[in-house]
Length: 245
Image (spheres, rainbow, N blue to C red):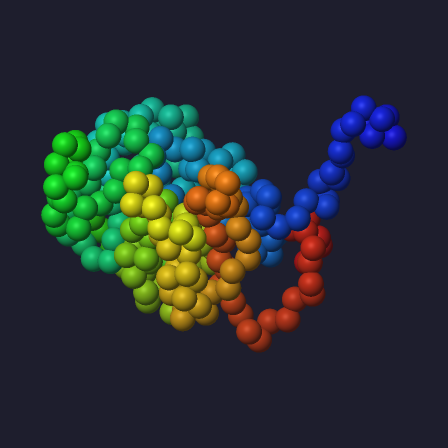
């Protein structure tokens, strides 16, 4: 009552809805179990990797960042966390080399599809190694990925194409992918509708949205959470990730 008199709105933790705290939603998707293996693709300086490691201290986080200067900062930021392993490469539909814009600590660096448009010729670029998820898990004896986060500035579906067999076999549990509803060439992100159709073909369902950038026209960009669907398994309707399974 005192909080209300002061104009404060109190939300009990149990009543937090889906789409607010993505780590809570991930835990719910995994039936209140902690992920064992997580991939942070497009790790930047480790923001997401650190959040995962703190929430799930027994989870091994593979953190992928291809831009050299950003990768160096990533390594410094995660050095105290033994459960985070950094990998200097990008991920795509196949293993190869590629050019990437490489602004130091830039959050909009993106892979260039084997060419540089005239508008991009003033940008700093680097040649980087690209691996497919399939090749990486095979070489590191990884059977399942419990949590896959992708923030690759419009390259999300190419990353997922490199994991097609894992998706078919439902060996990836939960996927958090950055996306947009309206294309903006200056801020490229994965198209939500393309992403949704791609995930649906593999039997993954949409769980929640998390807006990250909004203007007067609405959503600019954010993240969508997808979960492997098991049609034969009936679960009761939940209004919050804190609901008991």
